[in-house]
Image (cartoon, rainbow, N blue to C red; front, side, top):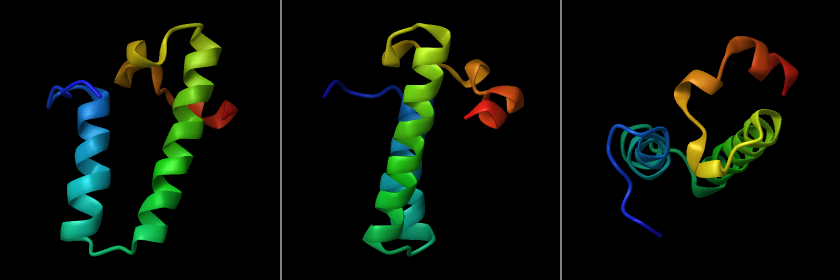
Length: 70
């Protein structure tokens, strides 16, 4: 996997899943896996809905109406 830029959507999601949830919230690995799977489903939905490659999904594409559709 390529190195993730800190300010990108996927860089922040990585930090959320690998740093914040386990080290600051002390959540179980099963809970973190559930968050990860849910985010993967959301990103796949947005990717398909916008007809873009996964790496092109941005914060701006995650609108309230898009999340409602999801």
